Image (cartoon, rainbow, N blue to C red; front, side, top):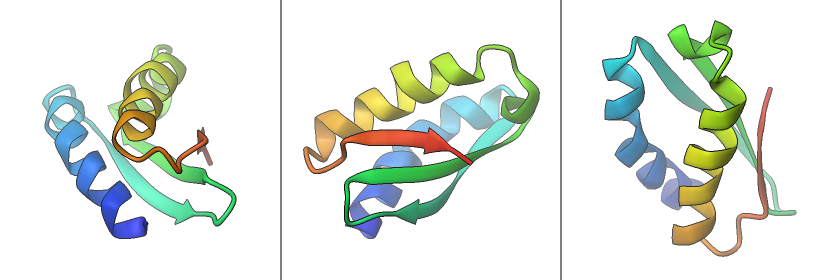
Length: 73
């Protein structure tokens, strides 16, 4: 499943990079929890939680039903 998550993150990356940020995949648990790290401008952005939940998590859940939650570490 890790490869599938990375493929979906690659679809999101261009938007994040355009704003000076990025996302790194930290872990994909067997429990359906994906751990990511927001880096660059995303790390300190006040909108980072919205990006995480409404952008990254929403797309991952849509494309990979096994994903239950995305958390930032």
